[in-house]
Length: 209
Ligand SMILES: C[S@@+](CC[C@H](N)C(=O)[O-])C[C@H]1O[C@@H](n2cnc3c(N)ncnc32)[C@H](O)[C@@H]1O
View 1 (cartoon, protein in one colour):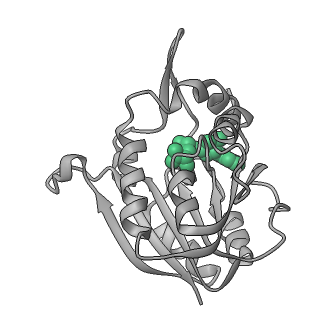
View 2 (cartoon, rainbow, N blue to C red):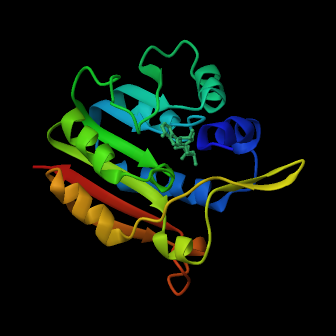
View 3 (cartoon, rainbow, N blue to C red):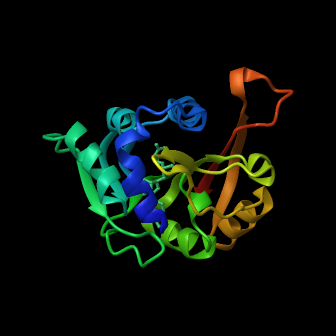
């Protein structure tokens, strides 16, 4: 099953399943970005709109991109009639033809674990951003991936694991730097705030030189 097919299958349960990673990342994004306001946000892998609902309050306009038509259909329903959100169905491993103007921030929430080639992604991010623009990444922490964790959901045939790739923290930092994106904040989020446990979410905030 491809990643897109998996999310099409997962879509109807995505918002309602118990999912600590989804919920903790929602908290992380809000905590990290609440000091900022933006004119134009590019939300990559926006899914069912978990974070779109908050981002649209912080920004004048959101472009919400996803390749799963079923995940995006749920978001389109939630925000029907909201002219401040434009939906684009696109595969971000291909050229980003959906970018026609520059953005103040590009966000990724639980997306990059599904991407093998980060170089292509960060090249497109750098091209999409205004100078001084930000990149927010909130991902399943690689420490969890080392232990075998990854995106998964239940189907009538049992557990379905979605294809994932492990990216070390150093890889994120080095690939971003190759494209003129520097880390200016890094945070880790833990279940129940227990900093003695393995962190669940890694947040990196980058800025374009
Ligand atoms: C775990 S969900 C996260 C959704 C949302 N950002 C959230 O935090 O709830 C990952 C999303 O990334 C999308 N995605 C994965 N690979 C993609 C690709 N190559 N191009 C576009 N979207 C992709 C999936 O369709 C899915 O909606």
